[in-house]
Amino acid sequence: MANNLRKKDDFPTLTDFFPSLLDEDFSLLDKVPSSLTRSNFKADVHETDQKYELKIDLPGFDKENISIDYHHDVLTIQAKRQEEKSKKNDEGQFIKRERSYGSMARQFYLTNVDEEKAKANYTDGVLTLIMPKLNSENTTKKQISIE
Image (tube, rainbow, N blue to C red; front, side, top):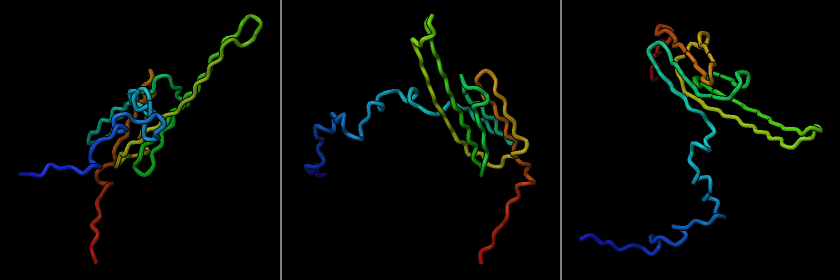
């Protein structure tokens, strides 16, 4: 028969059920759906024998504010947004002025990419990347002998 005794430290305390709002481990943002607080963007990655094809949702961004870098098999996509709205009365005084700024970044590990033939297109808020793979004869494996 198994012994089901527990040490006193194993029993939950009141603070286990009701964390303090001042506790650093507890955040009200934890209760907000992650889709509202997420700082990255949705992406579809499709791989074939010849290429990678990525479709990335970036609605509301200007093409000039999107950067794409590929370095050491890591594709990095960054997007920045800056928006200012203002409303003036008849005398030219501001009665309402709003500013919002934001940036997002995401990285993908893509090996064997022919960087010279990569292409990107941004239409209707969707960034499409075609990343062709290197030919198989260019990616020969080298056997390393053990001394």
